Image 1 (spheres, one colour):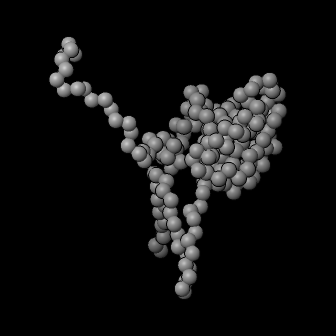
Image 2: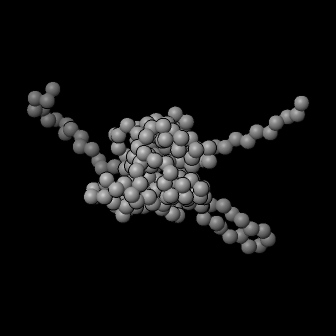
Image 3: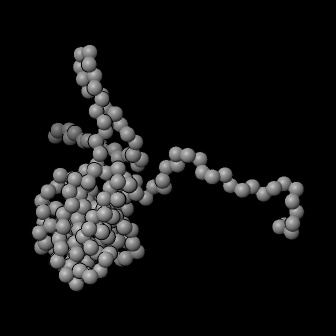
Length: 188
């Protein structure tokens, strides 16, 4: 019976830049930290063509804003225009699932990915097996969005740990008004 080697991966809960030094001899150069690679996914069905919120251009804008907010590198956006959320056989979604050269996929809202809980389970499990996390650019209270958030929290997903963490305060907040001493105006 032989010994088994085990590797441990540690995920940091806060992002902080790392600088790695490479080199040898007398010259050393510094490599900047690698940004997380993300892709976007946009879907609009024929029934939604007249709705402003679901326009592909608007969805792409919200996805890009989400990537910028978290300092993620948006490398591609896959699009399915005219396809229902009840069907997984969509060309853009299939291209996204076959690409796999990214760590995070951003959807504008969870229902852009699928409108079916069973399909959402399948997609989240498939992405999770490949080390990919799905993040909505717009948080909502719709049941599928809450289910996806619960699904990742249950697995202690490091991306969701970052998203759920309170924002770091780099500057002191505004001074709070303190009650003035010596004033008695019936505020006892």
